[in-house]
Image 1 (cartoon, rainbow, N blue to C red):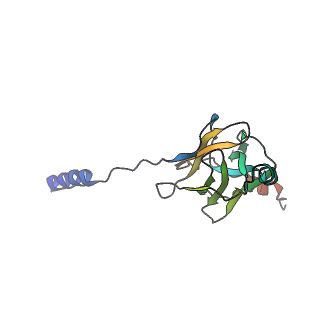
Image 2: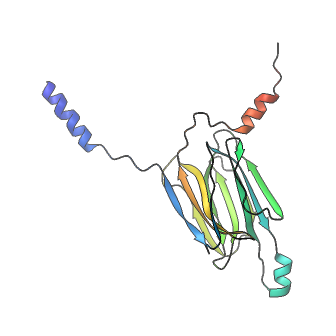
Image 3: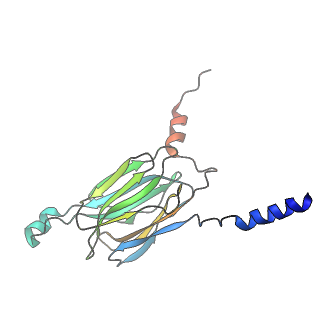
Length: 194
């Protein structure tokens, strides 16, 4: 009986599927010139700011282009701490704070192969989106390879005017101690009843 148990355990171990790599990377798109960057922080992403620059009039008037909107910079909040601004703070800022258990599960947009990321859309697992820029030029769509993963890092390059390339890194988040500032703020404002 013991021999049957040992053989069964051995065969079960041989047939077990290997564990998939819990991380994936969506290759960068765009021209890719300038200073490299990678967002960083501890815990889950809890907020995002994206700046866009709108040069419609200037480019339309002088160069007869339809539009030259582009993403000039962005900033991520990990837990309670904002990362540095990657790129620069342009004229228009879009901002989104994530709810508890909300995560970014898709990054999409459009880029001009000759210069900048033109349009950026961040979509959460709750269906909310943050979008900035103008939807023109070549499309891209990033999402995690593995179910349950979320955006961990945005990387790419920027120059003095804006973001020239962008890629996405996906993974799992250890939720021990990775609270969301919106919940902590809400709990701090509640007056206890004695």
